[in-house]
Amino acid sequence: TQRNAAPMLASIVFFKIHEFTQSSVSEQARLRAQLEAVVAVTIAPLMPTNRIVLEAADGAVVVVFGDPRGALGLAEQALAATAAGLPLAIGINYGAVQVESNRSENAMIGDGIAVAASIAAFASAGGMLIARSFKEALADAAPGSEANLFAAGVFDDAALREHELFGLERQGAARRDKRLWALAWLAAIGIIGAGVTVRVTTEGEDVLIKTALVQVRAKAAQGERYLRVLLDPLPWQKN
Image 1 (cartoon, helix red, strand yellow):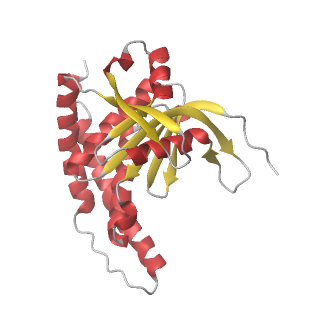
Image 2 (tube, rainbow, N blue to C red; image 1 turned 90 degrees about the horizontal axis):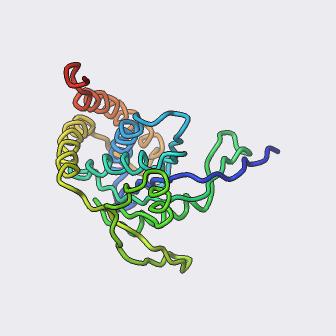
Image 3 (tube, rainbow, N blue to C red; image 1 turned 135 degrees about the vertical axis):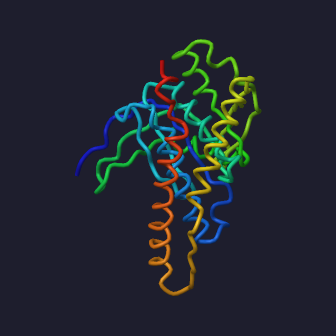
C-alpha cells in the first residue's frame, strides 16, 4: 500500500450550496453544474500547480498552495454568483492537508478541509466567513491585505471546537467589481439553466441523475465560455 504524502499548509476555500440536500434531484444537478462553471472560471488566474479542486457532498473545495490573496480573490468573485441565483455559503481556512494516495484516484484529506467545511456551515447563503489562521496567513503573505477583515464572532462546531471568524469589509471599488461579476454570472447562469428539463421518477433514478448532469454540464460549459468572453478585456484594455 502507498503511504499518504506529508501534510502541507494551504488555503482552503469551501463552497457550500445552501440547503443543497433539500433540493430536488434535477435542481441539485443544475446547482452543481453552475458551481462547476463558477469554480472553473475563478481558479483560472491561479497556476494549475498551485491549486487542487475537490468535490464535496454539498459543494466544492479549492485548495490553494502559497497564495492566500489569490484564494481570497477567487472566493470574492465566486460570491458574486449568489446575486445570479446560486446560493453559496463560503468558508475559508488555512491549515494542514495531505494527499491520500492509497485510493484509485488521489484525494486531499486533513483537518484543514474539515474546519473549512464547518466554517462554511456557519455562513449564510451569500455570506463568507474566514478563520483567524487564514487572516494571519494573509497578513504574512501580503501585509495590509488583512485590513478589510472584521471580527464576525466566535462559533462552536459539532465537536465543540471554538472558531474565531472574520468577515470581509467591501470598499467602493470592490463593490463595483462585485456588481460587474454579478451581471456576468447572471448571464452565464441563465445560459446554464436554460432549456434543461429533467423528469425524475423513483425507478432508475441514478441513470436519470447522470443524464441530468450531462445535459446541465453541457449548458455549464457554454455558460463558462460566455463568461470568459464577458470578463476577458479587449485588446485595447490590456495595455
